[in-house]
Image (cartoon, rainbow, N blue to C red):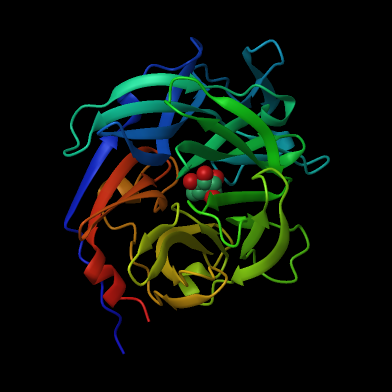
Length: 354
Ligand code: MAN
């Protein structure tokens, strides 16, 4: 049976690197992407990842940025012949296998109208503050629980890739709660309500031992800080998601269950970075450990030029959904370069899940 391709009612690029000033004078913005997004005070608030790389180029050297504990960003220059540079995002030192990112990210608030996509007013910056954020903070997801906005984000350091938690009531000031999922773990999204008194999160452990590909897991907590009852929820089973999957958007409650969009990627036949596409799953209203239906083909593929060409080609990476009537606005990162939004019909999305 041929899976129905879901129609994009509209699509728009909201933010591009050229719209932004870098944080550091000696840096340039190479991406503004993978945004958390919520409605707040009749506005749409985005918390986008801003990736910066050194402005300077030195022939034969890679400039690898990092935050120092004094709050400054510095660049280490490492000879390219000491590095494996096959991935534009990350290099690996040949001598000991240690990894470094080629850019450093922070998070920035942008406020826009609740309808339409034209003007985005920049707001506060969330900068790396702890040694566990030395190589940057990335890919925020926002969930409102009882009037507080909880933000899970990726913290990268020489300890690895972890997930940390922050909270805010107004997107002006933020409280940081530290690492809640230790390395290697990312793509953490929180449900907006408790189940039998417990908070629930989806997360994505990424073990070094490859007994199988990384999977989406589910966990529970009494306080959002300590997590337990970990259990696997979903392992990508289709070719387009065969290398890895990770939860994408904060779960939204629809009549039929919790809708979550996630990303999946495959490697190229030569082991290079393959396309990142998006799938969707519907989880049971009362028991979110139960998958009711899911997409067997991607609901979003990198089909537009701004999704196909960028810092990393062929990437759609959904990180937020805003639901209103029959409309699902999916906010996402395109080609690790721009922030985009696509509108789907809820009815058509659900019809594609089985
Ligand atoms: C990884 C992360 C994301 C990024 C995708 C696509 O999952 O680095 O931040 O958007 O890859 O490159």
